[in-house]
Image (tube, rainbow, N blue to C red):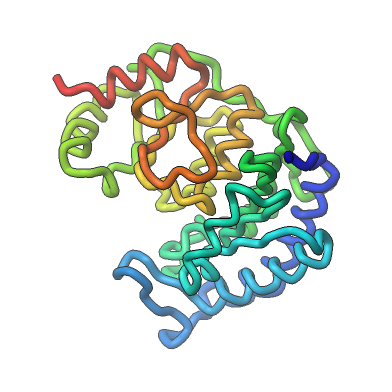
Length: 278
C-alpha cells in the first residue's frame, strides 16, 4: 500500500538535512585528518567520519518523525546489505545518502550534496537533494511537482530544459562505470553532443538537470541512495528517463543503467546517438 507523502513532509525532511549538514558536514569540510577517511570497496569508494555522523543524525530524525518507517542509509547497508530487501515492501521507507560526492568532499572540492528519498509500496514518493555549500534544496513529492528552495525563504517550480536535437544537448555520461563494450560505444559517441562534463557528484548533476541547466545524464550504477531522489525530482520537473533497454526504473533495480532526457522523443534520439555503435 502506497503512503501519501506531501510537499510539507518533504520540507520537514529538508530542515532535517540542513540541520545535519550544519552540524556534521560543514564543520569537517577541509578539516578532515587522514584517520577520518577510510576506503570501502576501493580507492574511489571512501567514507568519512562526517558521512557516518550525518547518517546517524538523519536516521534518528527521520525515525522520530515517522516511527514506523524503515530507514536505509548507504553506510548502514555497507554493514548490513540485507537492509535493502525491505525497500520493495515497506509501507514507508527513507533512503539516505549522507554525503554524495564523498571523494570531492574529502579532497576539499565544494561539489557534494545530501540526498534523501521516500519510498512507499515499492514506489518513490518523495525526494530531496540539499547543497550544503549554497544551502539550496531541490525537492519533490509524487504528483505535486518539483521545487527549488533557495534557503532564503524563496521557492520556485523546477522545469527540465526544453527539448532540442540530440546533437545540441549537453550533459554528463558517467562512462567510467560502464561495462567495457558499452563504455567504448559511449566514449566514441560522446563528442557528437554539444558538451559533456563530470562533477563526480550525482547530487550536483541532478541539480543541474532538474533546473533545466543541462539536457541529459547517463549512469550505469543504479544504487538507490544515488538515484531515487533525483529520479523523482526529474520526473516531477517534466523529464523522461528509462534503463538503457527502454524499461522503467524501479526501486529494486541494481543494474540496467539510466538515461535521462527532457522528454521521451529526446530520450530515444539521445539513446540512438550515444548508445548505438557506428
